[in-house]
Length: 355
Ligand SMILES: C[S@@+](CC[C@H](N)C(=O)[O-])C[C@H]1O[C@@H](n2cnc3c(N)ncnc32)[C@H](O)[C@@H]1O
Image (cartoon, rainbow, N blue to C red; front, side, top):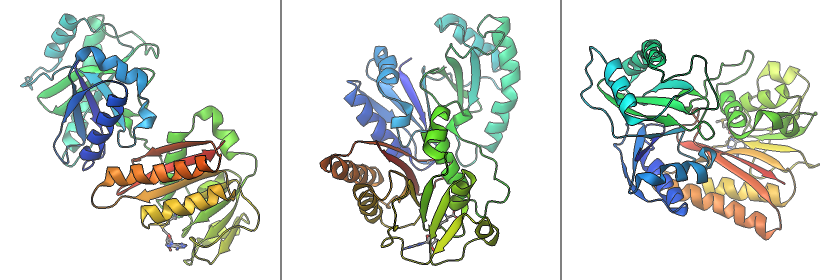
């Protein structure tokens, strides 16, 4: 396997490519990226195929901001017969010596015009699984200790065959966190904060980070989708925005609506959490985050960085670097994670915890 396939939001292939090249080179692995704008994935072709596992050992998926999912794969099978796609895949696997897998994931790009391909991928899972089992290539029951066989159809007749690393890949199909809109939440933005928590936190740390009746500030809160999530975790929230808050949420008794400028407001008493969904210049937001963390007003924060039109990757790196430098100059150690979430469009979402 000499290719790493990286799945990203369509339109962000450039950022995804820059990022993997940078991270892989830190791990001493080199190669080049092949992609087309809007296709929703990038091929990172390694100079030396022997290095492929090294990347998965040294770079964690959660360090990659613009990659949702990744797989190590072979050169694709092309012109696969639409009459019988099963046999060529079985033949390939029997001759490649890839070994038995514990599960199969039939993948395709999440980009414009791939709805039919997605339907096909879903329907293909049952017949290919049956054939794999009949040939001893798939365990009878799912085995989480084995890698997942990845069949990535970039088109109906072109498939990349490889594997999803069992310790370093997303458990979600295509790396997409499909969340149900919670009943009673006042806006669709609510899903973004929920996705952020699910992405950044291990289930074991959920209670430590969110539970136990914490205090929070929500900057740019209206109509209250993020506040709703905080209240749902048992928090009391100061929701800062000049706009109107959702009536039912206000009736919960856990929300204080503060009609102030989010860039100026500071709480009278320090809080546990500050979240910010204000759309503004990323450097302005970053410097406000620094004020809060260095000033000790909160120890945990989730916020968005709106991406500029150009040099998006560079801007993100500069903002994260600014925050990191300010905290370390102040003697504060922190955990920083950032991701281009499924529910994000032209922004990324960041989580910082001072530890
Ligand atoms: C994307 S919306 C927030 C949606 C909200 N997170 C939710 O889940 O319902 C951005 C909000 O930021 C508010 N906003 C913009 N600039 C602000 C500022 N300087 N101070 C406070 N709020 C601001 C806007 O009024 C708007 O309600």
